[in-house]
Amino acid sequence: DTAVSQTPKYLVTQMGNDKSIKCEQNLGHDTMYWYKQDSKKFLKIMFSYNNKELIINETVPNRFSPKSPDKAHLNLHINSLELGDSAVYFCASSQSDRGRDGYTFGSGTRLTVV
Amino acid sequence: AQKITQTQPGMFVQEKEAVTLDCTYDTSDPSYGLFWYKQPSSGEMIFLIYQGSYDQQNATEGRYSLNFQKARKSANLVISASQLGDSAMYFCAMRGINDYKLSFGAGTTVTVRA
Image 1: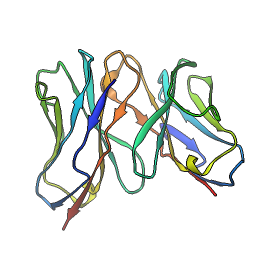
Image 2: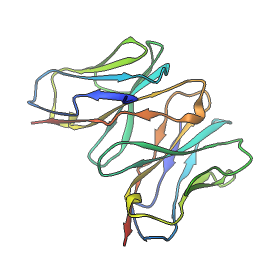
Image 3: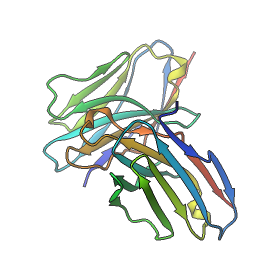
């Protein structure tokens, strides 16, 4: 009964391809996020949805497009993959009125673009 | 905008000893929350401890305690009685009370020696 689950765990693909990463949470949280962790382990937020509404859209190439079909799911689609997109992508969720609880993270998706 | 600074890229600690991980922050938000996360080599992000800016007492969770000095804008994590399983990367993070975005520091790698 994983709280935040991401698929796939590993993704190896060629430059120029389009790929998607899926995320689902069963915690009943109303907010979900995508973070990117680069090779130096720095974590940077990309997007956030609250009750299916986009609330954070950081400076990210428009090749990245999030989609939230419902508040339990947040997917990330990446077009025309580039070498620099290689990173670990984390999905996370939180409940907006329970700030002390922090975020619950998925186990990450390691994307390698070759 | 919030800025989190972790100045120690790596630390070694002897098993059973205590270790302090430094974290300083800068924010214009009058009310905010501070978080610490652990990332072991397996890659998952584990929430450790939370401190609210208006909490009267420093937070503690088992062997983890937070040395919060608001005037100095520091929120150092203390791990007591270190165990081999504490070897990991540790991230300090913060969020304004009305902000959805959790901003992370660069992290500190802790290696516990037997």
